[in-house]
Length: 304
Image (tube, rainbow, N blue to C red; front, side, top):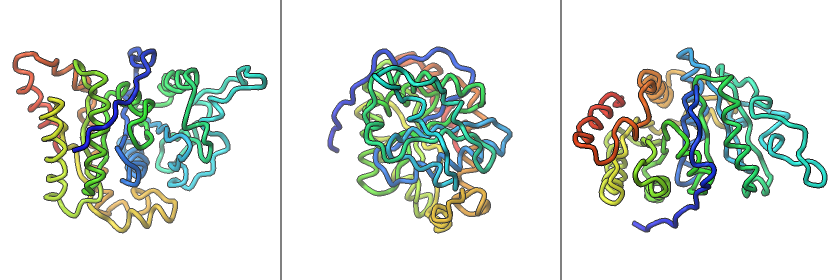
């Protein structure tokens, strides 16, 4: 498998102070794997379990979570990060200020659309964006981040900062390879304290195919990175998912009993029951005797 180029880390942004809300990053090595569909519907499923949920669409430049929700927001992330005239700061707005009510009971912070400059943020803008996550805690018990596809520095920063990262992949060989690339880029930045990551396989024909995808990614991660990648769940190929996208109506609200909806609801249940656990790296310190035994027990709790 081709080894990915190392993504640069932003040292000043690598660590965040203790937070009150749980932070989950949803990421993928490549686009087109259903990451945003999962993010939107997972936000709804967690809200249905009486969690206060805020979703940040951090796919800067090509965001579309609002599109899947049938929304037309007046303000987007660029209105928080923009500068005024002559380089002076614009009137201050926070991510919480631009959050809008989304169908299903969660708050959505809309990302940017069609602005190339947002794909290449300056260092001060990146700092402001990550620091802005603190403002969302007043709105939420859980903050979901729909990260951009790929292995960019902002993506790996969100992965590093999260309590848990859900890596989304499909059975396509390119998706499997790129999912591992993302996992590697995130883990090599923190070799002694790798961020907790789990896998969700989307668009699988059946459980056997999902298990095969997981086995490939997990085996390579164990061999070359010395970390396991648990399978948190899988979502079957479901024509109703595409119908929901075309209708701009979230799947869980349009077809709550569809195969994909049931899978996402099950994943939300696992997160809601077990997210009170500390981040995986803190539960299982590297090189500690007996760590693998406790890791296996923790993964058993996470199994769906």
